Length: 336
Image 1 (cartoon, rainbow, N blue to C red):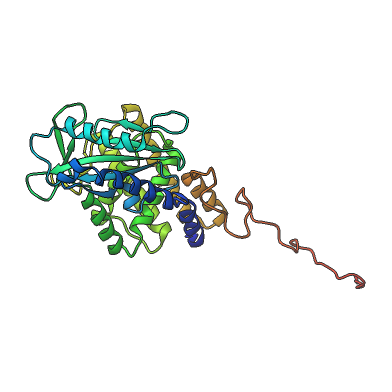
Image 2: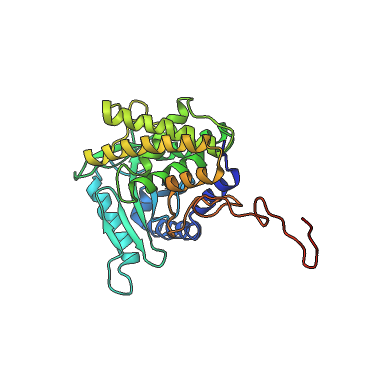
């Protein structure tokens, strides 16, 4: 079997965010500082916290967006979702305004305020949140309405991810990264369903107890198989993916029927390709298969490397001594 342990470690290193590891928290800090400096938001108990894939350590190269969950525990009931988004825009536009070329850096969205950082080639989404009545979860503005809110619990997913990773000896987070990279490779970065859906589907697969392994290869193949089944169940039978942070809730998927059909077919093919690659005795052929699944990273570099002794086409390199021939030192006589 081709476990290719070093190659999987190298692949994971290849999809790490890189410079974004420094730029993302700095952009978050600048937005957080601007919000915390506002007197009105201070009255509301403003308390920003980093959330999203970057916070959960499952981001892959490149990080284009950073999510800041802006908790407002003292927000009055008469402050509408439109009111608070207006306030966010006032504060953040005053701080960040436009870039040197006159392009506006702040953009109002349905549920958040987006601030672009062209120097880092990323943006920050600041999402206002008020307490839900249970005192444990939160509400954020509902898309398309001036005063509707939707319940959410993003910090819970961070803790669940940490717990699941510990329960699987540190293999859960790397497996999520590999599956997110696979989605990008086989579907395309802009296609749906997105990386968040794949992450939650992976969590559900792990939580089911059906994902296991002894190394990255085994966990990757096992998880890909189960996630493929989850996607098939969703597309074929309409069985929704559970939201692990809100019991009784499910994940919404923004994807067209064609995108869902493509995801179903390509993940099924990917699961079979991965299974065959793991069972392959020829490491070169196996590496080629894993290369196909994981594609290229955000720097357009091949993610999965060839093992030593193999050419880029998966063939073995010729040895110094050709089969059936001997190398004869200079000046040495030979006899028939």
